[in-house]
Image (cartoon, rainbow, N blue to C red; front, side, top):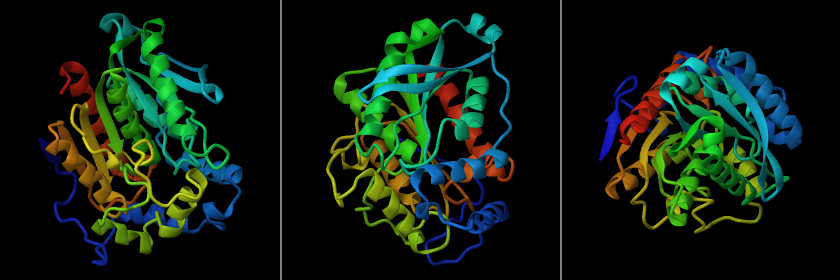
Length: 337
């Protein structure tokens, strides 16, 4: 069943309609457009620094937790950093082993970091409550596909095996991420299904890209040719870095939408943005999951652009969407639906 949750106005824009952005989204878009050099024109290391520097002062303030700890775990590329967020000890002592949410940051597989999504992970940890594990997967172009999905799989396996050591419940694990992180989370759910586990209780996909090379004929792709942050040139940069030389693929770890069968996957929440080129990608994936018998909750945040989720101090919808995802995790972890 596909359940549509209303968020903002019911009337959504079609590409070319030139409907008005939400004023808060427009203000952030104007700030982004003032950057002296587009991220794709910078060396990747400089682009990562500039991207995080822009997000940090505009994101939520980090809330205190019981414990936040960085650890090194093994992956195919060597040791990899994860960050483990624990709610306050009183909550954990009362609840016993806590569910675990593996979070995967976005950034086109090229930019983004644990640090720039730290406030969201803290809020998810505190308010669900659950243990959150954020993974510092390898980035392109230094580490092209399949480094990122392999790292995320290594993190999921490590969590499952070691959950009890950090107070987690290996029988209640969810995965999620935004943008490229949504792609990786969706692929992770497919990989876990194929491997026979770990069994997942939820996947939370925030404006995910499930079709890496935009091979579906979706109306919202037309937004790539308008000025709503995520442009055709920017997408080409991400593609060239992450999957150099490739233009199509049937690899579901690169494009989860290429999976022939989407049944037997966990409860899924998909959150998109009205003026995002990836809007209809997320919606179509949700429709296919629902047709395969997966419980799906779909939300499109009216008036928003791709990336709004990062700007908690400037965009109210960032907090609204995060609360909806926290509510979804609470429901999933309490009864599996």
